[in-house]
Length: 103
Image (cartoon, rainbow, N blue to C red; front, side, top):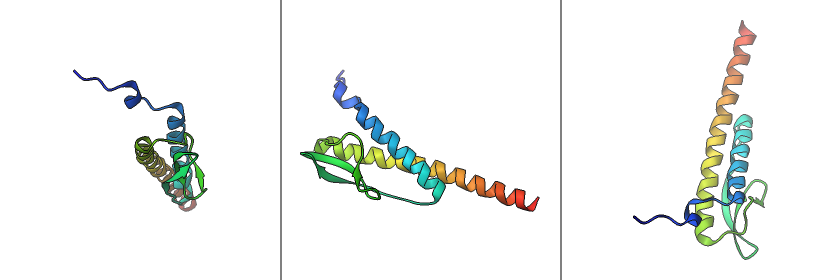
């Protein structure tokens, strides 16, 4: 049976940091009711995932073409999950405030 190489299945620590940062940004944006996006851009001889709001690269740059596309998808997914969670928290806080104001 063919096994994937370790480089195919292991995210470098910088990749994990980028995904964690994206999730944290998503939670914050969800709490505030904001949204942002990410894109790929040339950076130091490779590609980087760029936060379009802050206009700065996420950790882990530069990346190869193959890894950068996968990292962009991963960062967007982590951001979306964090934003969804932050939005849920914001809605629950608003609901509790309405209940305490009327009761």
